[in-house]
Image (cartoon, rainbow, N blue to C red):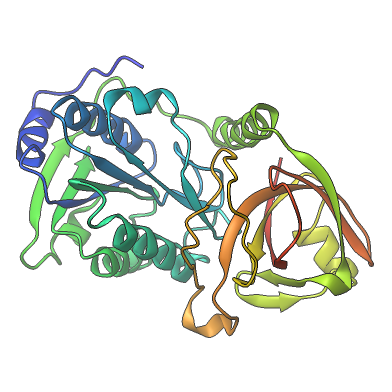
Length: 316
């Protein structure tokens, strides 16, 4: 991917070349946050730095799947060729306002995990910046990840009401690259579908059936029952995304599936969710669901230890 950066972007790259920063990117929809992240990532890797990218754009993720927060540590320029998440945190929705607590939690978990593993951390975010909802979400995220550097990509001051709240952070106000193209709602939806399809087409997946009484089911922190027809129609529909979680008592060592977590690191949902710590093991795509079981595709090699399934509302 050829990147054509505005001249102002080089100042930010030079600043980050010293290492040690946690940089959070702000900008409205189609402002080029992911484009800037890629520019910084390539530049820093070429300087010999290790860079962690945390992608918290649940609607238009470049690194991960829709409705997830994802991360990867890049150690050398060649790692960019495999631009796919190393670990993921399943949120279950692309509605940033509705899923805000889980998005913030996932971003914090991964930034905390990356400290000590990388020289610099980049946090990409959703395009929700307008109004009090956008401001509050971004301020919660900035505080949670302890960002010391804020980058506002703006055409007409769209993020100024957020930047004005900064206290002590280094702030960069950057122009939007003319190479960034606006996408319609239909194009954005098509991008999500293609992202999921490409992942499952390129990954060695198996087809599994999980009985209703053999695992617990959650949707955005709330326990649900697939015996409920409304749950099946809204959160367990055919071609829907979900996540498989271990209970922490069973090992699954030696797996090398693309984008699966093998670190044993624990992820928890927000405080109101009420469920125990979960190790998110693998994404899955629903084939069929009835009142007694759920059938799905996943790169996981075994259902041993899978105690919880996280359902969402994203279908492909």
